[in-house]
Length: 328
Image (tube, rainbow, N blue to C red):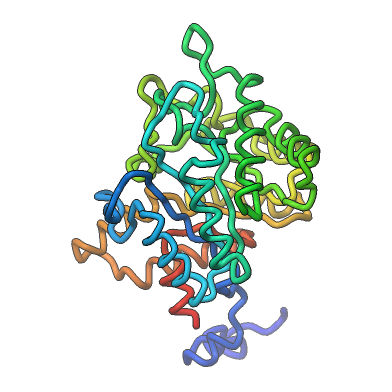
């Protein structure tokens, strides 16, 4: 570029909304959005989540309604989290054919399975009475290898119920390989795996733990989720390991605090990259907007554009249905 002011005037292409729209370098599409939904066993009416205005713990009936609304808006997919009535040390409800997630997946597969993609979160924290993401040793540590068997069983149960994508989120070493082997052995070789590959031990998960009722009853998850200040390149190593084990797509979580990681992952891989705009990101915007401190709609869209611009092909966001309608 050789021209200088006054010949060069970048503002020319920003003058009007149609001009800005025409030359936009980053665009959102409803099909790129994935809506997280919570379904709770044993409730007669949906429960509002206090720290996440507008988000509900659904009944099976209200879940179907929310899924239909998402499909009608053009949302690309749903990711389902379940809260069972009974929890135990091994997370038995995670692979119970009559467990709440399996029943809800069957409902959704029958009603909206041709309209959007059904993704199931595969972990144990929602199902264990101690709130950790795996089985515990006698000393209270998470037993990585024993947990892999439970993840594999849960993934197969979810696939049988109608899940179209398995999304392991527990950050156990070897989880993708264990799930891939189990799915293939049980006749589900066609089911893809969206791996939570770079999932950080973040303070932004608090509202989710209220929604999914999965806060650890002791300690924290720092020993298995990634350290926000961890070694340079650790996130990329985790991504490479998951791809070597058979992941079909990878995820960075949270999104906005880790846009640098998201960009590095996008530049490194040739598979779809997802980013999860997590509960804390959602709650902060809603709280600030409720106080009149920010323009809610503008900030939501700006945050999603930032995630897309950083390299996300898919965005998990609690605003998915709302934004899909707005884009339409």
